[in-house]
Amino acid sequence: MKIKRARVTNYKSFDDSSWVALEDVTALVGKNESGKTAFLQALRKINSISGESDGFNIRDFPRKGYIKYKKIHENSPFPRSSNGI
Image 1 (spheres, rainbow, N blue to C red):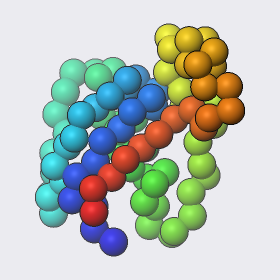
Image 2 (image 1 turned 180 degrees about the vertical axis):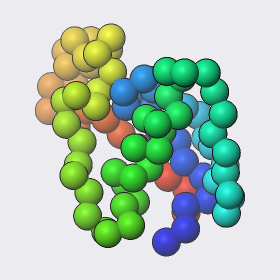
Image 3 (image 1 turned 90 degrees about the vertical axis):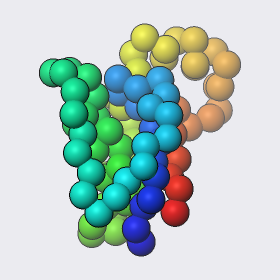
């Protein structure tokens, strides 16, 4: 499966990455601690090469929004990734 675009929400440093187009070669450019690695980790979790994912856990959710989110979504999964195929 080839992912053509991706959007990461509620994952580590991302509240919402907005849609990012993905080509055969895509460069992620940004300052240190801007979320480049977190974006790649989120993609790996939803589309790993081996077909297996270690899933999401509480440490993946942005800490600054955890308490607010928990109150609103008591029974919902916390991090979400969306992909456009």
